[in-house]
Amino acid sequence: MFNFDTLYSDLKDTELEPWLEHLPAQIDAVFAEKTHGFVGDWIKLLAEMPKAQASDVDLTADRVRIGQAHDMSPGQVEQLEQQLRTIIPWRKGPYELFGIHVNTEWRSDFKWQRIQPHLSPLKGRTVLDVGCGNGYHMWRMLGEGADLVIGADPSQFFVAQFRAIKQYAGEKLPIHLLPMKSEQLPAFTREYKGVGFDTVFSMGVLYHRASPVEHFKELRSFLRRGGELVLETLVIEGDVQTTLIPKDRYAKMRNVWFVASTAFLIRLLERVGFVNCRVVDECVTSLEEQRATDWMNFESLEDFLDPDDHSKTIEGYPAPRRATIICQAP
Ligand SMILES: Nc1ncnc2c1ncn2[C@@H]1O[C@H](C[S@+](CC[C@H]([NH3+])C(=O)[O-])CC(=O)[O-])[C@@H](O)[C@H]1O
Image: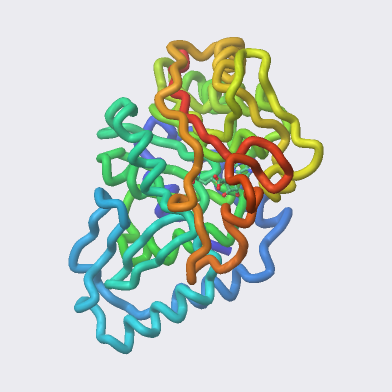
């Protein structure tokens, strides 16, 4: 199993310290319920990656960049690239490790560029990113000066990818990925008497959840009073009454429960008690933002669209359009 000792020591002496009483048992329970069959192989792979000190780390550029090619011998760089390629697909990025460009399926930097100007400055804040994937946006949050960044994603595979990056960026950095669903996290404000994160991100998660209200209530319980929620999700054009419930798949995705208009989502956020809700960005996903690469060589957006009309998915629904809504917990 992965070791979480540095997370535990980072939580000490913070507002979130009461969580330490339960967190180790919560993580044990996750792995007791299901440990991915390859976890042992991934931990071994990480230990076998070349040892090197990154001469610099840049978390502020579009490519999260760790080290320079000359920090390793050419043989070590080649070995590292081969090892990184054994843990494909790389979906969220891009990264550059010791000169190796991990050219991921998503240009996740595009999303960050759209969202970042609208955020309350992250400097000094504690941040939670639910559904963080392999953690690309978490690195950008740390790059903005956040004090502590915690991600939660049920995929143990993404923890392995995240750890590959972190072991070179710096094991002591206050950034951690928990292999947990957001519904497995505690309702902080209730369980720990008003304790909560300063900023909570939920990006690309809502449409995978059967109940949007439950997800919004969870997110609210993670935030301290006045904390900020950043919700990014698939949407459709329309008014407060407009939602799409796909008959089966949406853009070939099996687990899309519903896609709503921004007006619908704001109404629901307000009903759950969020205030100052506003749409800060809305756009159709481009073929430049999501595409197959040699680090993710399965199907990608182009294959999910109607080949004769890219304004529609292959099932005939409106093509993926995404919006970001920012609001505050009262
Ligand atoms: N219940 C859940 N709780 C937490 N995570 C979940 C849950 N269900 C699924 N996930 C996770 O949510 C992520 C959704 S991707 C967004 C990544 C990043 N945020 C991005 O905005 O690029 C979707 C996209 O490609 O946009 C996956 O990593 C799932 O494992």
